[in-house]
Figure: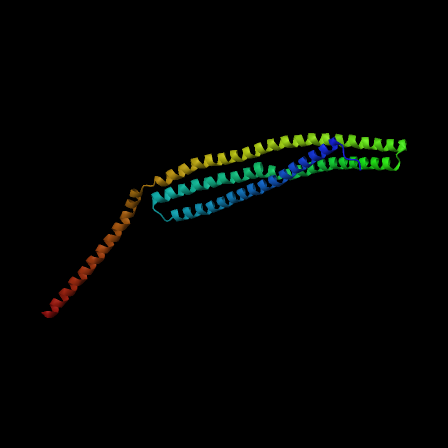
Length: 257
């Protein structure tokens, strides 16, 4: 059988390279999408746990002295505000990171279809090349049949060349868009995270100040009256017991007389 032309072998090598690139994008974009989605789910679960913590702090604060209660309530409010920011973080990551990565499934599918069309054109070229070789072997003197086979091969080669050129153009566009998308997606991820942490840092600072500003001395003074009342009640009880003992002593004296 007639060997393939050097340009045909070069196109086959190029097609294999394109196929490998498409496979890499499909695999690694899929993996990154799953891992980013897991990252967002973990963030959402952290938000839910923090909401429970906010509720517990607020409930406990209701049983504390005024200053501590006020400080803990404000601390809980600040912590709740951070969870609002975390919710916005989750929503923005889903929209700006996960969805664009997920959309590459459809992009890869279209590129596979483009590659399939080019491969079909290459297969037709290879088939026509084999057909010409068989015609030359079977009818070496029939110039009309050989010429017709050569024309069919030429047409198939032109189609393969055109399809390859179109594939090159669409793959070049795909590669360029891929780079731009990676830059944009990763940039969005960092921007969303920086925005959350910048806001959270400010609110955490307020939370820290609110709990550190609790005046324990004032709260202890607030508890002092209740201690004083308890002490007075105990003193009253002791006086009452003493009076009862005095009465008993008087009764004993009278009996002796």
